[in-house]
Amino acid sequence: MSTEQDHSVSVSVPAPAPKAAVQLRSQLGANRRVERWVPAFEQDWTRALEDAAPAGLWA
Image (tube, rainbow, N blue to C red; front, side):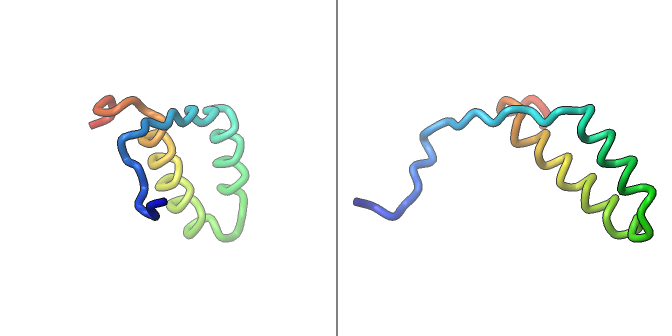
């Protein structure tokens, strides 16, 4: 058995729910740590959308 990952298998990741992201973003905006958390959230949200998109769709 190999410990190497098989990158030939395509994994379908469901797209994140936009409504949930909007709600979370508004809650983060009301927090005192907004300067730190909002950029991190936006970076993670972008990465989630890229991971859920078919290859080449966002590129």
